[in-house]
Amino acid sequence: MADQVSYFLNIEVEEIPEIHPVRLFHKVWQSNVGSGYPVPWSSYKPQEIADVIPWLLLLERQEDDTYLYKVCGTSCESLFGMTYQGKTFGEDLPVEAVRQRRQEFDWIETGGKPIFSATTLPIPERDYREVFRGVFGFSSDGESIDKIGVVIAPK
Image (cartoon, rainbow, N blue to C red; front, top):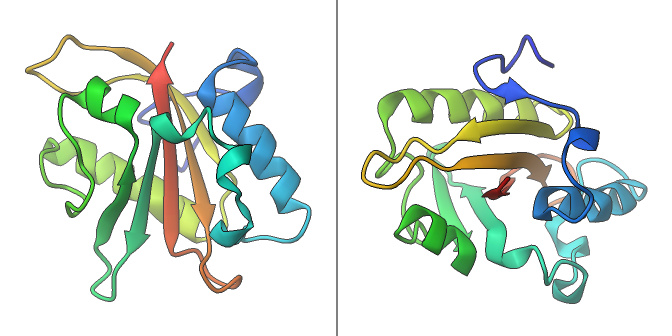
């Protein structure tokens, strides 16, 4: 996997503190993977991930292969200084960041396991923030990955 997405500082999930939102979400993801992969988004109950929802970005693939942000948690809004909810993926992001994240999405869509990274947010107007990220794939129909969940929170 590291060769597939080598532009981030990819890390193992064990390098993320147990109480960090990325690690908490991974635990729930693992428990849901037991029922098969790809994991249906409908298998998640809000109360299971209540502590993570503020740090969650959920994107859904559209018919034209673009992604639409369906969820932008309140802590993500504070972190980015704006909401992405309702926007198309790629708006308000540097071109290189879009290219890199799209490679992650492609990896996840082809059945790749979650990607964990440590990175600096590429938001020039804001203080550069060091964060842990987790990128996860989900399915609406239980067969193909059509949703990407990104949990992102400060180190």
